Image 1 (cartoon, rainbow, N blue to C red):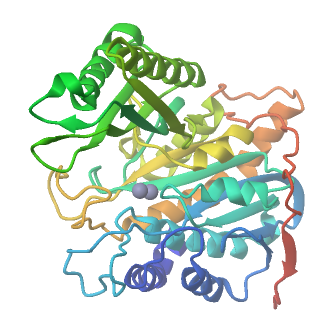
Image 2 (image 1 turned 180 degrees about the vertical axis):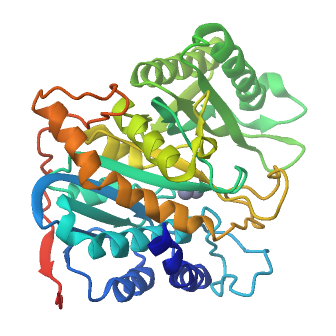
Length: 434
Ligand SMILES: [Zn+2]
Ligand SMILES: [Zn+2]
């Protein structure tokens, strides 16, 4: 922890530099350059792809062993910043309101701490600097580019949470975050004069009926034990008071916690919309835009994260979440292929109870930057020989005297993911004075 504390001024400076110059989407070249500069001189190998500005920095330990991936996302949100911070965004219409600037700085901190321990490190650590988390599927592109091949044995990510007490880690086994798909429904009727609706086919009341019916569908046909959320966030129809439009459009989101319910809810929405429209003699065109899958956390990885948090910071530093959050994360793509876990890290600014105001994606979102040392330090612990021995003991079937949770070995090796069409990531050797 002492080494981690010593890094804090550097991490704050890096985070603020990234915060002041946020970048959106899959190409975050300025952020990548800042990270590269902060990693200069470390014994890392860099892998780059063709689809994004993301890269993976690999630290090979001096001894053989398993590989662990740590991920930090680098992109910002398309929104205006109103924090009034001295290092607030200088880019019009872009803000780091989801804390990815802090994730990136913490991952740099972890890389520096672990590099300093390279001689005692078993196996390797992959530091994944990933753009395009905010709906751009950046993690999937990096997987498809082959940057994570051969796949690591375990993968971890942290997400800061401004509404959670400072320094507290939170996580859960199983679904942590939901799948998120976009729903588009077009109700097609027949336009006409608003005073003579019987001569036209008004799509507006039909669209309203569909919105209401969707809510009944969720409560009556979706199990409360495998829940779903369906929200129509936008209704668009017509141009003025005396014209019946031909089309009414609905735009919404559906969130689920299992592949089965994801499938069921999509089928149900389609059936409902098409059926209601048909009942009125109209037509509904239903389309889904597939978003992120469910973020599923491996039991052993969560156990390991908990143990590390408690051993470093005490029992009060861990919170088991009772329920998932219906937000979504593209780290889910990594966890589909590699056992692992994502954790939240409380970063409430100010003293007293964390407020409900100014959470993630708020134009007023601020963090307590001191938590960044807490974010960086556990990475070292997770990758330490002690934990790795636990993994290896289990993998080889050797008896482990500790209880199963303490011997939180990480899962069997999964088949190596191969990209569909893109070539494997290019390996670039860094110039490393050791
Ligand atoms: Zn976000
Ligand atoms: Zn985020």
